[in-house]
Length: 387
Image 1: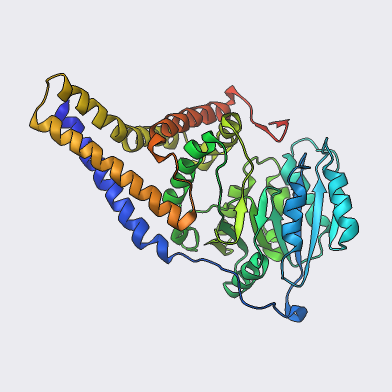
Image 2 (image 1 turned 30 degrees about the vertical axis):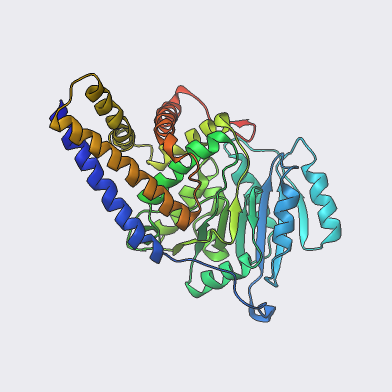
């Protein structure tokens, strides 16, 4: 048993050391955008339609829109689709629209059978949009000055058809600080930008809060109507773009975009249950392998030093047990170094990094729940609707 633990822990340590080296070497070279100097001449720039689906967002919609309206990109319109809100979302948007003609409020139609709410809202916005570029923006996503200009310039220069970005995701509550960085870490490690931006690589993903489409490509793949029942529509849109031979581009834009809504453990549970298993292509084998990998590579290394220390304290000391303790301590140091690198590159919160074992247990439980839901044993609740 001891020898097996030493072998497994050693292999895990080697894996994480290689991961740390990759972070330090590779991720620092990934594409990034920053605010560009000067205001562009709008005469030759395409019209950009910013489409904001909103359902019960009265607390966030004003800040989101003010950040958009403060952009220096010279040609854009903003269409807010009120998705049958039960609060004052529409009234807030109407007040802003009265003071800025670039903003239009669209009253969402009743949700038809077979449609997911967000897909239907965005579809209605696209029908009314006049731009040759379409930006789907979530209400909890806030653009820093110069973001639209930098994004449009890079998207046009790189001939992107779907352009999206990695944003800063601040963590407010205790559970956010514990759990959210682990999920972001898993996504970043499994889907590096080099793969996402490589047309020859089938891997595809697109962070949903900011989806910038060349309209011709969006319409060619069928838009949201082609995946109207998808709860994780951003992933499917990115996959469809690549499948149809169009260009996906994902960049690091943590200095220009922030996306956050303060949530607790319940919202984290429902939110990741909605997407976790889908991100594994709803493949049972991949789901089981992911559970095993998290147990071996993410949870076990944290438990090993406590086990070894306990055995030493009760008198079961041996060179092997001392080696196991040393391996476990090294694991912890490497994990902390990885979190530091992720903070430097992506501003991922690292305040509760030592509670990663708790985060791993929660993540494993969420994956099991996500698999059960997709198998028909449950439903997904999102934005007050049950799917």
